[in-house]
Amino acid sequence: MSDQTISRNTLSVLVLDVDGIITRVTALFTRRGYNLVSLVSAKTETEGINRLTIVVDASEYAIEQITKQLHKLVQVLKVARLEDDSMIARQLMLVKVATTNQNRPQVVDAANIFRAHIVDVSPESVVIEATGSSQKLKAFLELMETFGIKELVRSGNVALSRGPKTMAPTKG
Image (tube, rainbow, N blue to C red; front, side, top):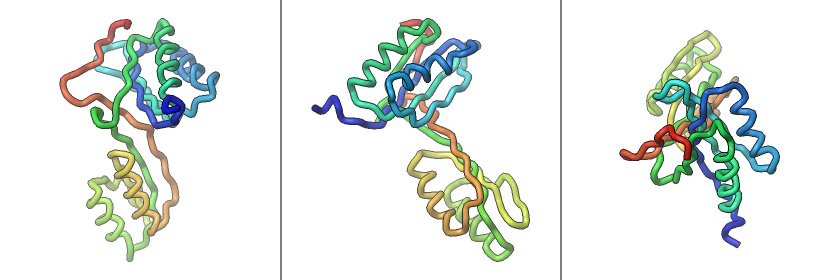
């Protein structure tokens, strides 16, 4: 029964930087009805190779099946499952917070406590850039809600394994 328990999983997938690769990868998930929490595609240190960081809610069995299906795609070079205790994961968030002349210093102080950066200021709002773990950004948002959030955009995770282990960009 434990293999049917749904949990949050992070996959790091090295792919060739070719047209349509994101569509082919996401099709594997949508055809099977898996909940893609986030997908981030970014260039790597190797020209022509991108890293997809995929966060998905799925069972252990489903993750094994997803991994096997990903390996069947010619454009997929390598797939690794990242464990929570052995990875570094970060998100980026931009949040526009309502401000007045009276509360702007409080908003700026709160942003500084979270090591966030003010990237735009207007008479009615500030835009703050924050990076960090999902938990850190959640706590930051809870604090900003007291001032009034006007707009918000948040990336999915980007993640790497801890320590010297790397993903060599070779098939297999």
